[in-house]
Each structure stands twice: as C-alpha cells, then as structure tokens.
Image (cartoon, helix red, strand yellow):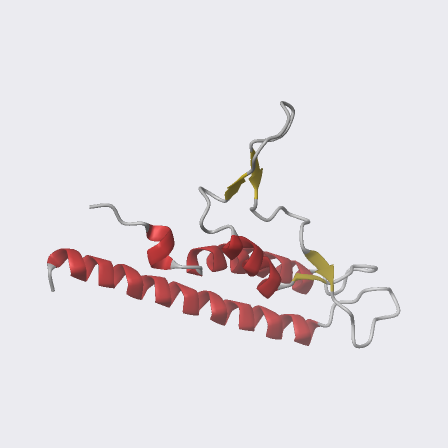
Length: 138
C-alpha cells in the first residue's frame, strides 16, 4: 500500500520549513538590535508559503518545464534561497545610528512565529497518529 505523504500532510511540512527560516531571520534581527546601521529583515510568510504550496504537486520541490531548446534547464528549484523573499521591515522610529530593529516588535513577531511552528507540529503529530492508528486497525 502506497501512501502519498504530500497529500496526507498537506502544506504543513512546507510551513515548517518556511517558519524555521523565518525564525532564524527574526532571531538575527533581535541579536543585532544594537548593531549600528543594521536593517531589520523579514519574509512575507503567506506569499512564500503560497509559492511553496503551489509547487506541492511536483517532485521534491522542483517544477518540470518543457524545454524547447537544447540549452534549457529541465528542472527549476522552488525552495527558498537565503536572500530570496527577504524584505526590509519599515521601522516605527529608526534610531540615530541607522538601526531599524525594534526589539519589542521583533520579539512579538518571533513569538507569533514560534506559536505557528508549534501549531504545525501538533497538526502533523495528529496526522501521524491517525496513520499509525489506521495501520493498527483501531
């Protein structure tokens, strides 16, 4: 019996990947709160997840393209690179040294991101428990 985990798990596995990357970006902002001329960065979670979810039906995060010439690529990766989709956060009140990090905003965003991450983990845990239960015939 073959189980298509991409269909069973839905978008939550990609959400964990995007949320993990966003967590690192927000943590970097918090750590650099006192660094002169540091610009706070973030990603647009919804648009990034939408891009990843649109490619969900493909194999391993790649999209197959029709090549009309010999030099064309046969696959295009849809995974987020380090600087792709990174945006600058618009500060409410930038500091005199050019730093745009607002520690309270960044901590709130990091906390919200962590809650979303935990929610996706719990959803996936429930899905796996359901699959195990189905195999056991419970």
